[in-house]
Image (cartoon, rainbow, N blue to C red; front, side, top):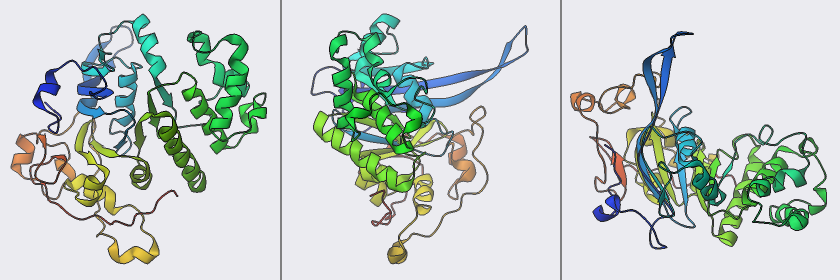
Length: 356
């Protein structure tokens, strides 16, 4: 069972609440998707273990980066936290309330404090709606936030807040560039004055120069509004630029987690080392580039993950112990937690290409 060893033991079992507690506490979150066979008489023949025992905390005003290869369970973890997918087991505490056991009516009220920015700015906006209607749509569900006669003015204020011309509220999404569309999505996420925003790879579909603008915008909004971000990405240079802490996922589990400096400068898990070795380094800093680690084989299927350590089938350190026992997520003396039987501290390059 995965825990979060850097927390005090009494907090692991306490029902969170109050400003001194984390805004979001995820405990042993599990989401398995059943695999069915047959058309009329369906029978279960297995499960896809998309998220399997994930635990972490997120403080108010903090950014936690969730990184890993495609298919490692990042987006499923986020969707389960939001309640868009029903958790198989585990707990999700938000502002002192367990969302897993919450009813639909109560969840609707909680969701005003939890918003999401989607990956694709082209498909996440309704092409038949004007920008004013897109930004004001959350107020149809939560009508007490902004009175109807003030919604247009508030929509213009939000557009201006994210760096768009407020006079463009009557335009349609196809009249904007990709970066501008993502800014519209950010404005919509801010409409209900949330405390937590889950950003699901919000810049991966954008050009590098536009990525920098959007990332800097998110940082400025966080400073101004006190937002907390769960930032999902696979670009480690972007994650380093915006995140306070980083959690590296592999095949549904957290492999390494800690503050940004610790994970990047005192890397201890073989998988994290391999990811960092693939990050582009400016030509002037080639001497600081670590030796490239090329992982052998493919990522195992989440419907049939390896026994013990899930990374062992691609790890150059794997032994019989790795096959028989799952490594606990604990601090091996590097200042952050690592799930590895044979952690080894190595210094990653301090000069990493950034979106800025």
